[in-house]
Length: 174
Ligand code: FES
Image (cartoon, rainbow, N blue to C red; front, top):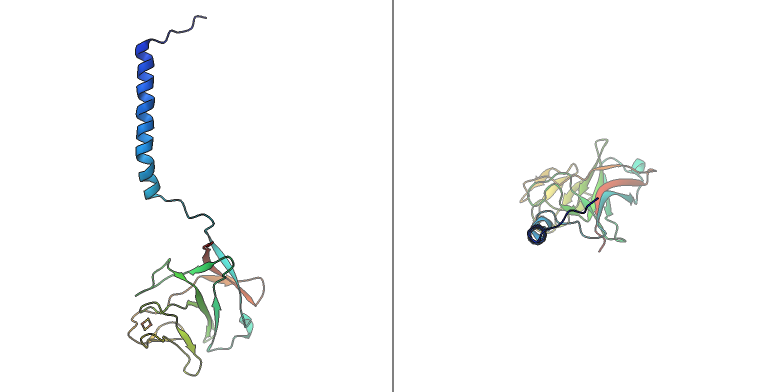
C-alpha cells in the first residue's frame, strides 16, 4: 500500500492548527481555574463525630451542652440556616445541644448580630452574647436585641451511642 504523501501545505496546516490549539488551551485554562477552583488540598465536607460531655439521654429539659469543633485535624461545623451575620454554609467552631420542651436542637455558637460566641446563662435559661448584650431563648429565637435573627441550626444525627452526635461540617486540614 502506498503511503499518502504529506504535502508541505498540509504539514504547515497541521502545525498552525496545533499552535492555535495550544494557545487557546493556555488562554482558557486560567479562566476555568478561576471560575471553578479546586478545593484546597486536604479539605473534606462530611459529618463530624462529636463526643458530648453529657450523653443525649441525660440532658435535662432546659439544659444545654456546649461542644467544640475537632482541632485535630482542624475542622468546623457548617450552618444549616442563618440570618443577620450568619448565613447557610457559614462555618462555626462550636455549638450547643439543647433540650427544650422535649425537643433536641443543635445550634451554632455564633451570635447572629456580629458573630461573637454566645454563652449559656443557666439561671435565665438563655444564651447571652457578651459583645453587645443580645440574648436568645433556648430554641435560638431572639429574646433581646440588638440581634434580630435567631441562632443558626447545625444539621445533625445520632451517633453510635448516646454520647456522640454526628454534625455536618468540614475538615479544614490546616
Ligand atoms: S455580636 Fe452578639 S450582640 Fe453583637
